[in-house]
Length: 96
Image (cartoon, one colour):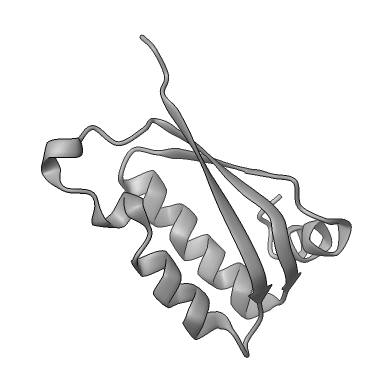
């Protein structure tokens, strides 16, 4: 079985002050707007966090919800390229 993958780049501030904008962007993300003709979804997805400049508990919670949604679609997500402060925040929330 061939495992297909995709890569998504997350960026900006994932903080309480910006969580609404990030949630709106995720809602419009291609994986959630794909039509049934484009199925199946990729089975593996890399979420590249290099562009995330800051994250707090609200941002981690939003990321957790998004990861859960991906898993419910049968997509196995992996986080990559997080800066040390972002890794620290993710670790505090049990995401890394």
